[in-house]
Image (cartoon, rainbow, N blue to C red):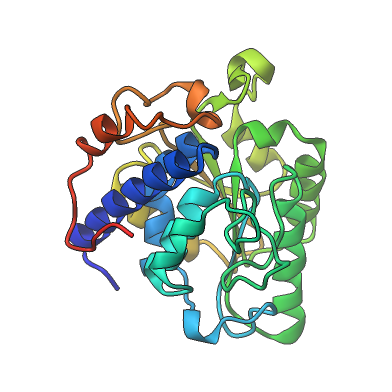
Amino acid sequence: MKTINELQTLATQVRRDILRMTTAAKSGHPGGSLGTADWMTAMQFNILDQDPAQFTMEGTGQDMLFVSQGHITPVIYSTMARRGFFPVDELKTFREFGTRLQGHPSTEHGLPGIRMASGSLGQGMSVGIGAALGKKMTGDNHLVYTLHGDGELQEGQIWEAVMFAGAKHVDNLISTIDYNHQQIDGTTQQVMDLGDLKAKFEAFMWTVVVISNGNDMQQVLDGMAKAKSLTGQGKPVCVILTTEMGYGVDFMQGINKYHGSVLSADDLPRALAQLPETELGDF
């Protein structure tokens, strides 16, 4: 377990990794990655009951995490590498031809920590439910976590899965919504307004936890602890995590352009100057 200060330092380093990876590759999705860096850091280091050295695809005897919004691989790979799933130096290969660190997660190369090829939005909820039911069938008391973009909730498959999980009492599942109100074509309100997410999930027989500032590490830790305490009570748990796209770099924050646009080599130093170097060191 890490202290709050250690987690905050890790999140800063993760943000540095994200910017350097995507700028070097000249492609990628930095905005959502920066926004979820606090949550992903907290998950990998303090919340998930897992052992990177004992990783298996089946996930028996460990918590499982499925990131349905698979385009945020920069934050996925950085936190996994920093947690010890694979060497940090491998982050240099992000999006290179033949790399294990492809633009969307892939199971093709057997990268430890990845159990699902994601990025085709809408599918992660169904996969997470299947894994959670599998744990119930085998008597494994560990939890299954999923992460979804708010724009992803415009996919119909999500709501069929949400209805199923509530109706079938999949109460070992915690699904977090990265609620940054931004997607590739604009704000979620402009593209397709999501309405009252809390009321919608509750109507589908879920318990809902709201984290009002998903870029505050203490709120993330407290909110996820509360979510965990609510499992095993007959309902799946939804966490509505309000984040800010591009968080940590003032000229990227809240701008949907950075959903899938990267910094230029000239802008990178200006961005990194807002994220102090840490003792962990750049890759």
